[in-house]
Image (cartoon, rainbow, N blue to C red; front, side, top):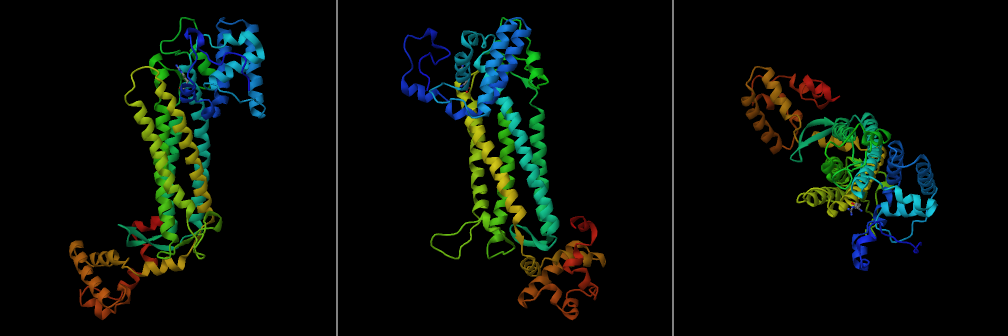
Length: 444
Ligand code: ARG
């Protein structure tokens, strides 16, 4: 730990140092070490711009740049001495640079504030990490597609969690494929909208130096710069947008998790999860619990919480930067890691699950899943749908009383309800055939 120099970037106007408790309270250095790389990347661009604008000499620029590159190298190789009570990562980088290149390091922060700096760091980090989320999502999408293709089995579709109409397991899984495709599109949109560079906005009111904001924007891969300095230092919309996208995505993961919990229960018995993603009980030897699915469902709460947390932090803030905004980092970092972990674990559960088509078929046969098709059949014979609906209702009561499925009733029994019914009805309401009719073919 380095102790023998000033560890604050703002000590000048203070007669006394911070109270220890105050220091612990406001420092966020150890919590945000993951921002180090972005901070260095941003500083490298800033120093190049200062040289271009002749605010620093070539020589000063080269020395600072080499120092920053050395820090970056050590960071990559895990050789950086990160111990110490730094206020934040910006303080660490500046003091580490001072240690390496001497007093010229003190020129790095010309025409820059930590307020534009930290927002730049976050933008660079969010941009990088959204790519990671997209990568994980693409993995989940292909697993869903593959597992769906391998499992074309008939299964009951539900409304109100009551058996409703026949669908296939494949089609059910592909509904989630559609949801996650929308999530991917949303995250791509969030990525594409990271167009403005905050650097140069200064503390809130730009700078008296003739800097070139567009130059740093170009170096860092942004299309443009913030048109308003005050907005540029206090915009956290891009973080909120990511958190909102993660929340919707987690909602989808949570719904799928809930289905997995239901499907693996003995009551459904539609799916067996791979042992690797389940756990046992310390007392009940027979138990196999869908913990991974339950945890995904549970962790959705914290991702929602982080979104609500940051929205609440932001809602009462006057322009421009306020220290409250420092809270954005942990919310984002936690949601990011939770979301990626949940996508990845879901991908594994989906790619290794075993469907149990026999149980799905049994469930299809119980619960009058072809009742709507009996009504459709009567409509084809010329009856009004509302009338057909009522007649089939009567048939269902009769079948239920006699503990039979509709297709198990004889023609004689069925004809009592309507004289338009003939033998054709049995093929019409056969579960396999149902999916070959009308637009239901789209489900195959
Ligand atoms: N640690 C601060 C943050 O995370 C950096 C910006 C500090 N700015 C300031 N004016 N104190 O937001």
